Amino acid sequence: MIGVVREGGLLVLTLQRPEKANALSRAMLVDLLAALDDPPQVLILTGEARVFSAGADLDEAKAGLATDPIWDVLSNRIVSLPGLTIAALNGTLAGGAMGMTLACDLRLGVPGATFFYPVMRLGYLPQPADPARLVALIGPARAKMILMAGAKIAAEEALAWGLIDRIVAPADLLPTARALAADVLAAIPGHAAAIKRLMAQAEFARIP
Image 1 (cartoon, rainbow, N blue to C red):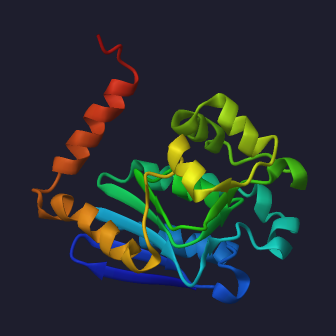
Image 2: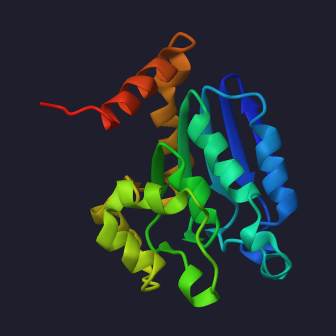
């Protein structure tokens, strides 16, 4: 249920459970983690059909997946990757799937997609690292609108907020992601990682 394509330094991971709106099972999360054991220069994370992911599989969520630490393990693994990470969101993004996309460096969305994280309504806490990453992208008030008020954010508003970085027609989604990956793939090994370290340092430094 996870498509894995490696092309040199590029790794494309595709959620492939369209009959369940790409809802994530624990087995799928394990497969995603396993695919990252050999860190790529560029990761593109996308989904099959018209929904990126509806979040956790509901039956497994009720059985304990909703609070399983594997979600944070996966998002933290993505954050730690030395290269460029791109979420090519082919449709709506919901629930637990938010974590892996917040962990990416760039997020592309398609027209008509919506973004929501209904932890308040469902009675769960968000994954531990997600609130801070969400606040860093869109600010505390907007993060509260999503996590506490249950707001569903349309693609255009998500772009204005900074939740996604570009809106792309579905046919252009993967070509755009690949174009964004080109400079990293052409660079010497370690160059992207060095730039990411400098940007991480800047987050904790006071820029005059």
